Length: 121
Ligand SMILES: Cc1cc2nc3c(=O)[nH]c(=O)nc-3n(C[C@H](O)[C@H](O)[C@H](O)COP(=O)(O)O)c2cc1C
Image 1: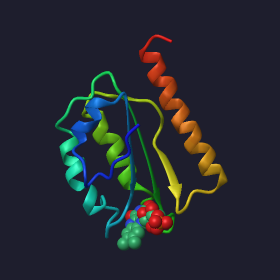
Image 2: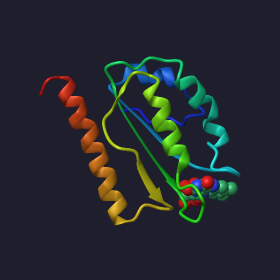
Image 3: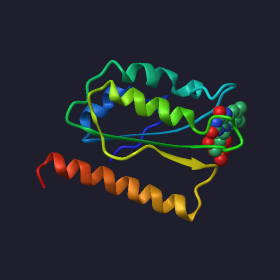
Image 4: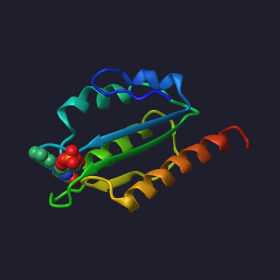
């Protein structure tokens, strides 16, 4: 497993892995992508991740009009890479509580199960 900051890595690094996960917060005047995730976001649509599994999760704050829109943006962006969604996008309000932690665990399990399926298990 490799964990990288999106500012430090090009999304083509995903090509070396079977399961690709993006975790992002939302930060901006109008629910925009975090500025530091923009290059990664636009480079992502230029690569093919056929045969791989992806999942997107992230944090936000329900006080804002749009809750975690950057999570939805990345979830859609991955579709352009011809990869397969292994888990529904997961949104977390502020810091994860106990239920969020369970959901994260389940999110990870879904990704692994989806990957196992590609191996025919
Ligand atoms: C300027 C600013 C804009 C934000 N805009 C949104 C937003 O549009 N939607 C949302 O769900 N959260 C928004 N957030 C909340 C952050 O995503 C939230 O603080 C973060 O996910 C929780 O992580 P933290 O505990 O590190 O703050 C915004 C936060 C800031 C400071």
